[in-house]
Image (cartoon, rainbow, N blue to C red; front, side, top):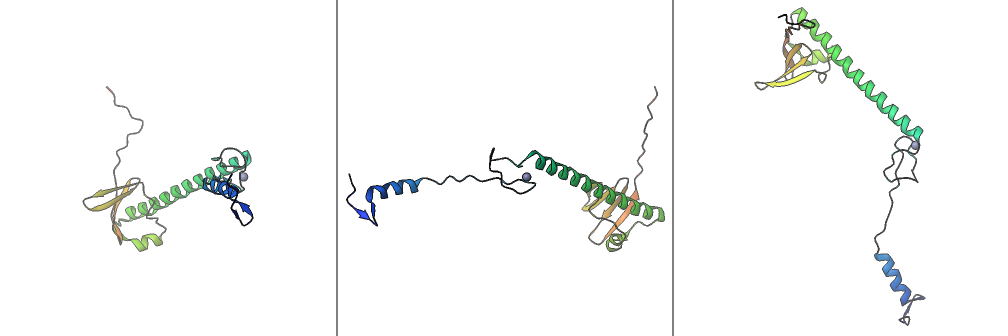
Length: 155
Ligand SMILES: [Zn+2]
């Protein structure tokens, strides 16, 4: 036995055991937190997201509600934009300053399509298209859709 050396009242044998123990990597378990209430989840799988069924349901319902509210807000913005553009088309206005347009309640990011045409950005709000530059929109025109809904070709 190699217990002759004593250091701070601890035998050398015990010191070696301590060293071996300290060499092991520390295994720490990350304790997940409930996404709804924020309480620590101390049982179950480590990838558990909710502490109970009630929290899971509450969280998912809030997600659905937020998604619907976002969709409604975007649809309203597109609808408002269309109203503004339609009034301009009917008044024969084909170009307007962006600052004035935003003051009317126009949301620049609410569009139904965008494409790059000969180094210009062409946007559309349903059947009304326009070119947007950093300072104004121009070329506001209504596209003829030629919709023939419900008609079948007769042979
Ligand atoms: Zn919870």
